[in-house]
Image 1 (tube, rainbow, N blue to C red):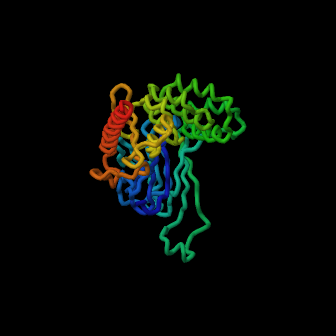
Image 2 (image 1 turned 120 degrees about the vertical axis):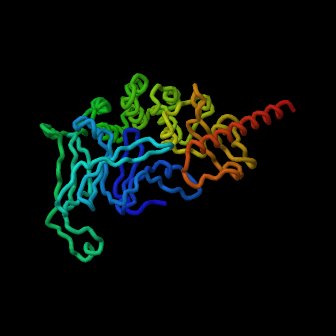
Image 3 (image 1 turned 90 degrees about the vertical axis):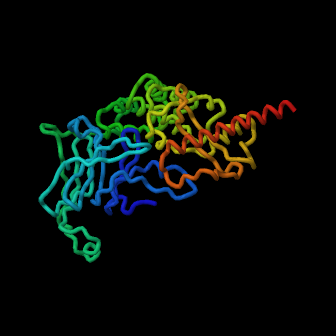
Length: 371
């Protein structure tokens, strides 16, 4: 069930998606509803203020004060302000805590409809500037087309950037930007590298994934994938990486590719927290494809569902799981997850299920060979 008027989308440093609603529905965390399902899922609302928002970004630039880093900012067009929220982990998702607004105007015509952090690290605000914002009057032609403003909110003493064109940089220069302190440059560099598909940078990116930590390691992994260099060999290394988000995204990219080989079933990974579970989009075909690759036949045909889990190599903690009811035809009858609810419980259930079925499958195969 989608909220009305989704008027702003943004992704954090780990590519977790959030949305603000323009009809007063609040702020939403979107990952749970990106998981494939045969039944309707509810979007997870993480803040319900009754106010309306339009345009959103997450601050990620050293140009602005530390107190704003990682905060979600949005246009509060109904009450003439720029709102600020602190995102916090909560269970298997998030919560948003409202903080004092970044800007409040006494001009009732101030209508911020978009808020973005620019390449210079300043915050840019698109002001619709109109006394009324109702649909009725706009449809009647009662709209002031003579106004509209763009504001630039910058740190005191900050100087504007000189004009530049990232498209003129070499691929190696773009890779240098993956360590930039302004998220804008990192994202633009990734986009351009993805457009180029420059195979010559793959060895450098592989090395950066291996040797880097934190955001640089993760950006390097994304760039490696966008450049066409993500494969089974570096996936094995990624699953054992010291950075938890590199491990999570290695699992995610393996799933996005739609193929996991039998050789990779022994590779394991760890979770950086409950949030990581909902970042992963379960791939329903995974275990069936592993069985097909190993034996030439699909898993549990005509008898049960296929399922997949990935465990932490040291703690045994479950990282990801998927169920494919198209394999066989049976379905889970004793547990139904109609809403995202507690992702951890769902993952635990799927993990237990596949443990039981793999043991049963192994016993059956042993008995078959003995006969």
